[in-house]
Amino acid sequence: MSNTNFNKRIEELSKKWLNGTLTDAEKEEYDRWYRSFEDNEVNDLSEEDFDDLENHIYASIQNKAKVLNHDFRAQKHRKTIGMLLAAASIILCFVVGLQIYQGVVESKQSEWLAEIKPGRDRATLRLNDGSVYDLDSLQLGQSIDLDEVKIKKSEDGQLTYSVLQSSPKRAMVSTISTPRGGQYKVLLPDGSVAWLNAASELTFPSVFNEKSRSVELRGEAYFEVKHNRAKPFRVITPTEEIEVLGTHFNVKAYDDEGLSNVALLEGSVRVSVNPGSSKILKPGQQSVTKSGKMRVEDVDVSEAIAWKNGEFMFQNESLVSAMQKIARWYGVEIDLEPGLEDRSIWGSVSKYENIKEVLSIVEMASGAKFKIEERRVYVTK
View 1 (cartoon, one colour):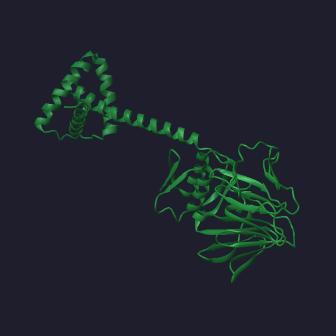
View 2 (cartoon, one colour; view 1 turned 90 degrees about the horizontal axis):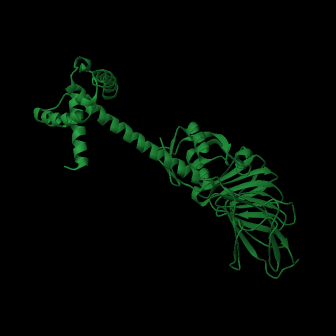
View 3 (cartoon, helix red, strand yellow; view 1 turned 135 degrees about the vertical axis):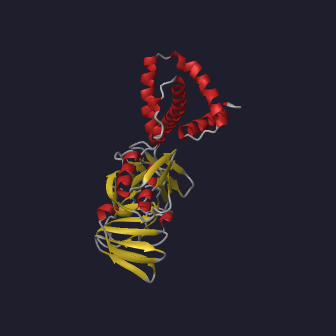
């Protein structure tokens, strides 16, 4: 019999002995095993050691095995002690094994947690001539000098555009892309500023035309638009078009969320879903577009731009939406147990905290539990 099968058999007999359900044949089999155990280990104990050991085992067996129908203290002979030691050894093996397993899991959890870092300023610049630049490798003050424009990484880390020709023959098109776990600030050619959130993409020309200033967005960005009444500023997303003259607003239009939001902080914007459906927003309002239909509602704008200010802010936000934000910023995958979709949470925490602290806040707010394996977060009830 292999060691594995032998151990399983002894475990089975020990449980039956503790429950008082051993057959005569099983009792004889078990006697042979505990006699060998007793010969090797128990005979070396003094009578005083037996009494101390018996008292300890008595308490352990009563507490752990819940065997309440046996008067262990009434049996003072070595055979009983041997059997108790055997049973206790089985229990001890289980306890030690469980502790070792838990220790390994906790060690792995610590390793995985250490590898998951908050996001940071990083992005890729892609030009319409096919050239690609990793903006991480561009040093502060360093520039990309092209025929029509100079693209420079300023001392504060933002990307700036300086047009070298007043009327270039062909406007160069730039696309700034942030990965999951990235964000970036861009000073556009007209002097407007855009902050890109994680997993976002902004496309714009090096020189805007004479009639308008148009950019295309996928993902999320906060804009501070330079006023120019003669040239309206337009943000085009897959679901809507936002037109402004000069204002501060946030646009959230991730493909995987199924809806988009435009939140207005200052000024006035017109949001159009199609030619026959448009709304003008006032400060403190947001539009919500889903399945081609738009509604306007009041909003706490501080929540809408919390990401730009270095925070996760959840105000009656669905657990699904909160976990999507966390996933993008920390670059992890989320596995949500069915039945948690309708839970909402309140709370805020710095997005530069380690992911364990952020998940602790969400756990307290939602009652959900979290387990991390490599770069996947399992969310359970």
